[in-house]
Image (tube, rainbow, N blue to C red; front, side):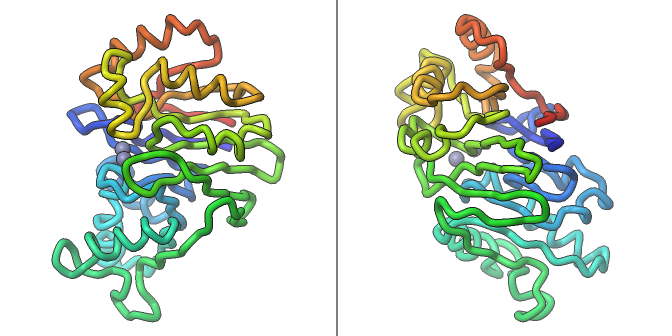
Length: 255
Ligand SMILES: [Zn+2]
Ligand SMILES: [Zn+2]
């Protein structure tokens, strides 16, 4: 599996894109920033988008993708996968004909550009060669991480935004992960802020890793606040984990 890191930042500043991860050019995990990064052809290659939660930094590019499909007369349909509270927030607060045209009924209610598809916690969904399973994580709003398993046996877990989530690892941790993409948004000095906002610090990451019976082969850090990136990087280095690295926009992960 090849994952293109389109955005992996916990805030938007020049040179720092908000979360979007493209798997094998066709499946997108989170949709923060991709319409400002991918050209039209690449955008139209995306068929399925899995959303971890409805925070704006994880969904912002969806309205612009829908617009590009209409304008480009591309005739594409996109499936947006999420747990019910996530899809409901997207529908009520974004595609409500006030914030943006309701592309869940355009051009026709039975043939709309966006198809919102409900998924169930802990239930695998088969998409092409992948089994994709949402597991609840702890954040300030309903949120999941996604376990992605290729039929060739390789698997990774993407947490989306998460604070400490012991129960998640009970589900996910019984299987060897070949890659873990996990949120570390704040430095250790901002532990309280991290806990309030449903994120991790390097120390909190360490506590999470201690809960996973099989340490993932590779650990990739996502969602750092750019203002604190250097401190976070230093604190992560002190953990002396050889298989851990901080992602950058544009990185390619091979799982
Ligand atoms: Zn969030
Ligand atoms: Zn976020």
